[in-house]
Image (cartoon, rainbow, N blue to C red; front, side, top):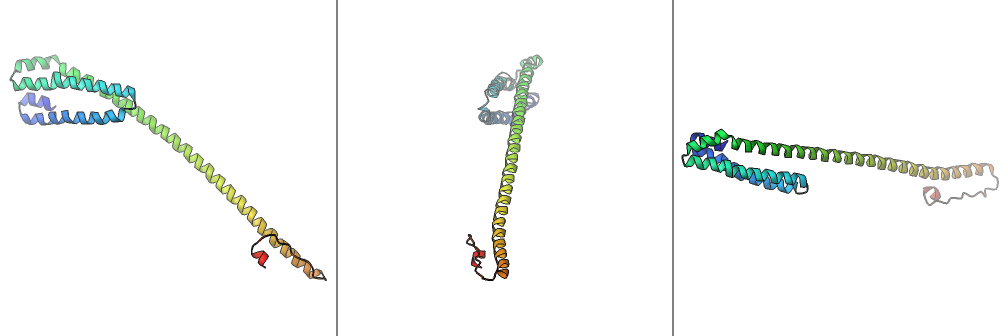
Length: 182
């Protein structure tokens, strides 16, 4: 857009966004290159996009700007009537669109895989919680049974002491707890 603005008006202020765009695409390309390094198909697409952009800059962007600076209006008119730059830009847009769609598909696939992993992790946590709950209930049952059993022995022996005349009945306790102390 900056290039076209400059060609139409001849005002250098339109070259600022063009030059900024040239610098930014390289920085953004480098970031994408790093992010795409593990995907050979996308890397090949990205290299193709880079090639087409560099080709457009040389054959259309810079070329047209140079023609305008040199005042070659007839050559500019011929160039724009050929639609060569527009065809190049359309190919670049198509390549970028294909690249973007593949990246969206890859991202959606990654999200779906992560959701499956999260679901599996959640199921494993529920199973672990169930095992812990059952273990705690069994341990509580065994512990309470041991306490109740000892209390029953003491209660039974005390009840026998009332009816026993020789008072020689002994309580046998095998635990080391408060009941033994009693």
